[in-house]
Amino acid sequence: MRVAVVILAAGEGTRMRSDLPKVLHPLGGRPLVVHAVETARTLSDQPPVLVVGHGREAVEETVGEGVTTVEQTEQLGTGHAVLQARGVLRGRADMVLVSYADMPLLTAETLGRLVQRQRENRGPITMLSLIQDNPRGFGRVVRDEEGGVAAIVEEAVATPEELVIRELNAGVYCFDGPWLWDHIDQIPLSLPKEEYYLTDLVGMAVQEGLKVEAVASRDADELLGINNRVHLSEAERVLRRRINEHWMLSGVTMIDPGNTYVGPDVTLGRDTTLYPQTHLRGETTVGAGCVIGPNTVIEDSTIGDGCRVTLSVVEEAVMESGSDVGPFGHLRRGARLCEGAHVGNFGELKQSTLGPGAKMGHFSYLGDAQVGAGANVGAGTITCNYDGTRKHPTVIEEGAFIGSDTMLVAPVRVGKGAKTGAGAVVTRDIPPGVVAYGVPARVHGKDEERRDDEA
Image (cartoon, rainbow, N blue to C red; front, side, top):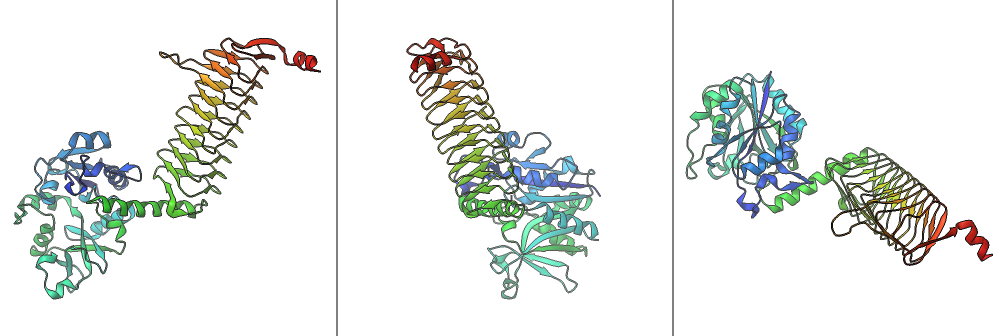
């Protein structure tokens, strides 16, 4: 049976007290609506239908292609919102699952159970309910003698007997498609808010003598709706716990999971250890046997096996196996540490490559530079790569030795095995195997000759 998913995302979210539409607020680094869309895609081959309203253009830009959007120009309740999808879905799906962009913790497993129960249901509706002691103002699910749903009673009008019911309406439904579209515009107007609610479809089905079923959940966290910043912070804690538990069960050590932040798109290798206040964000991959943190941020980067990142920031960079950075290092966009390369405290790279086994100990900056294998970059070295208009490259060839406080005024090349003296200002290319020092730096023979003179 064909399944379509409708996601309601039209609300303004005034309780967020924000200029940003509610469904675009980030959770674990992803906008709320993206969580809902990604889950929906696991349930249906059809593109999810997103009902948008407030901030439509920004929401559509965020979700991108592969999503069908329809607009709810007036905020007239959930029933009215789903009605907007009838034109694009009628006759195209046997079942319609209705969910919400502000319930980002709903899992594909739970929604899949809802869909499966509706496949088996002779009636037109299967709803998701929650069993818990704290009713939180939700409507109560009243069941009949056969265990089917007889009614949903809102808390404000519930009798004392109904108020003790602990099965609550979560507001998520799976409908028989043809029945839904035939009844959606028959929902009565509810006062005093003058809105149309999906809840009333349950009563309509019962009145017609049709079966309404409920799939009960005991996981209140999964059904957390985001209405304000407090709810958002609660959802962050739940998502962080889920993600961290997944990786710990997969072989990752977290010294303090409550203070370790791993995004939903991050992947981690086994036997990696994460220390407190580690933040892994975006499309980041960390290999096996790494040690990351404490107090480290890695974003949209690739970290190989056996790497170490200590009290450092890594952004859009690559670290090959066995390389390390920190403490207080900064690998900026386009930085690459090849196998076994080392960047020490207060080192910074941007659009630069440190070759296999190369070392940049401390207090140095490389921009637009290529450093060969086994080269050594002394403390305080700086590539002067920007002339105020354009960026220029620096090349340090294999085995070169750059003395402390060397200024490399790009474009410039230091040849294989060449050396610069401390405080050198290099404005011209240095041939392989020679020694250069001074301001500006001048060649003073080969390194072997210099050692013979000193002897």
